[in-house]
Each structure stands twice: as C-alpha cells, then as structure tokens.
Picture 1 (cartoon, rainbow, N blue to C red):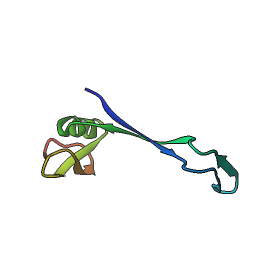
Picture 2 (cartoon, rainbow, N blue to C red; picture 1 turned 30 degrees about the vertical axis):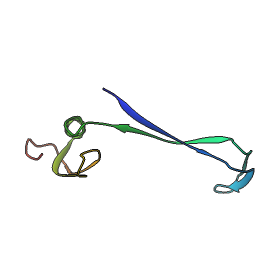
Picture 3 (cartoon, rainbow, N blue to C red; picture 1 turned 120 degrees about the horizontal axis):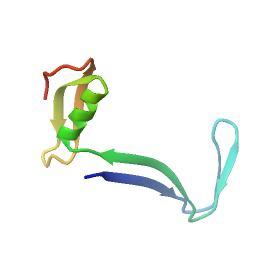
Picture 4 (tube, rainbow, N blue to C red; picture 1 turned 135 degrees about the horizontal axis):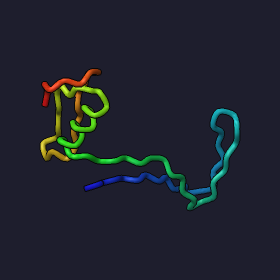
Length: 81
C-alpha cells in the first residue's frame, strides 16, 4: 500500500515576494506545490532504513500509532526494533 500526502499553499490575495534574489508573484487563488510526504508502516520504514544501510535502534509513536519517529544509526545490523 502506498500512502502519500501532497501539500499545496493557496494565496488569499495577490502577492509578490523574493527568494534568493529573483522576484515572484502569485495571483489570488493560485497554488504552489510545496511538499510530497510518503507514508510507510513501521515495518516498511525499518525495511527501507536497513536497505539504505541504516540500523533502527529506537522508535516512538503517538498514542493512536498514526505517526512515529525512528532513531537509526549508520551501518546495517540485525538488532533494533
């Protein structure tokens, strides 16, 4: 199963702004795509970490187990959560 959150910001009014020099403008109602966030089960996250050469060593989650943070160290081993 793949789960993804895509974030867009929408302007409430016309805006002009600068980012590192160049100027930009957006009209009211225009959107800008700011983020893609892929969601994984705790098991899948650990598998991906190990595949990338990391070793999960601790994990914390919210009471409903909807979100988690995994502490990992460089170097794959079989120990950890």
